[in-house]
Image 1: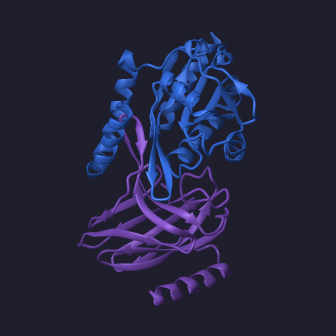
Image 2: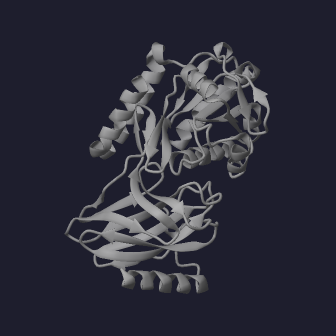
Image 3: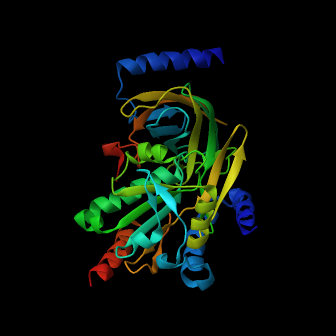
Length: 160
Length: 203
């Protein structure tokens, strides 16, 4: 745990010096993590959402089992489910990342819910977030804070 | 009671994942467009009174004469609501000045937290043609019932969230129900549906 905290702090410090890393792909064994983003918050009372793209280029199934970030006291994985026209957000214990596939946490589907914000999320800034995978372990990625009306990470070179 | 059943069904659908999501759109479309028992009332028959984000009292009879778009949501909602408001903002942007001839409302299903001032702050992040509405829990309930929309408070440890109807309701200028734009509906289809309302309004 201490190592992780140290890493988070180190990352946070390095981020403040070079803030434009959020669109870069981060590699963790056979997982490629990219397009991590969140929305700007009004104050700290409301939960924010976290989105990311995870590509598993390997032959082994994995699963995203949890997220942690210094900006949220209670980060959780959720899924937006629309059934009979009614939207609900059940908790997701883990998000499957099957071999040779790409999984997106995106608006209207799986997402991280960042409850208990410890700071205001300001558009244009970044924060570190650690993803915990069942097989591959932990990796910390920079998360781009986009405007409240944003619908994607805004990484121009990644969009089709 | 029906709302609770829906909620339980929604919560137990976690295991069905993507399939549930896919079915949800189609079911909502069918039930709301073909089941006449579940059709929203005509705007002229609606009887609720709410307060807009400028603090002004509004009643639906004032909406007749212009096409109307209504979405139920709440500002504490992290995923569906900002996404839908962003969708609506993009549609309005695409429609350009034509969209000035419409009424566009977000009705809060969380009046406990969404005061007019809170709605005003929140909506300043989206297209200024979207007006927020809130009011007493009884009037919000009346509005939802008349739209045949549902919402349910869902407790979470020290907090709560709201389940709510996610589609965007469309009404013609004469107040007749003009269909639903489903959550995740293709942007071009959504635009066509709104343009149809505007054409009817102009002719």
